[in-house]
Image (cartoon, rainbow, N blue to C red):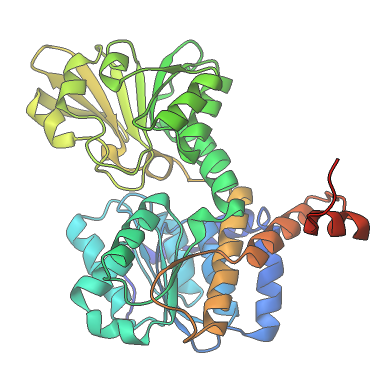
Length: 418
């Protein structure tokens, strides 16, 4: 019986080549896959994964399958799916329900398909799978051993669920691992967001005034890469600490309403809704480009933009031109969805190597800890974080020092002083 829904299965050959190419940049995941193939730590475990269907995710899925898991995959964003990758995974025997550009109705239909897999482990980008499971099929949560969440947005949602007493099984916040957010969020998002905007628009960054909304790890990466290309970076924030950090990192810091009067490119990465709203659009210069790098498409108030506009047209792939009633033009990229996957290929494989290594090892750890954890959001175990970091260093042929016995004793003592 057909248990997948993809665009075109004939794309599988192309997808396999791209998956193999990404795999060459993922040596840590490769080492874990080799061990999993022997030990089979996930033998017979049903996994439902709601992730961006990319070449890197494909290598994760194949690693979990090698570990003995029975895995089904759906998209975590309607525009992030790479259709050739979806076709290749179906050829490899992994059911995929994801089509690039799918409607919201189809998106949630695909999530329901993953829910009906009756998962024992869940893997999420954004917590839509976990949310749907808890809201519509609560009875299935009793059999779930645990789950993982890889995004800042998703971790916020899950902590809110746990705080409200609504989370029915333990979940590991993979996003918060040091080997994830220090690298994936900063270097991955920094490069891929700029890549997506460049592919969509072909703009020159040098000399351009770029407004980065928020200054978390993702925004730090975006600001760093835009600055490296010669842009004049302006940061907007609501928290005084990261605002101060941005100022000391040499960026201009000001309220968004003021930045709108001078900015040329606006990039959101906050995890909140309506960060850019009607009041901001009304202040923007003619030709302003607006893009989102947060997980969901709520950061830009698109309905407010439409209310201010007298016409809209698609001028390039992933570029919609809105003509405002005041005659100015605003260009919205990727329908307000995360631009690095809507218009580009997402993060480079070498940085996703660490993120998906964490996913793989956390899945193994959750199965080993079955029945021992309360329903809450947990950090990645420190030993896993360090193992991933060490494996990555090994793959890069980088050696580091070790503490001597005397140094270890000193760090554990309190008596020694000046």
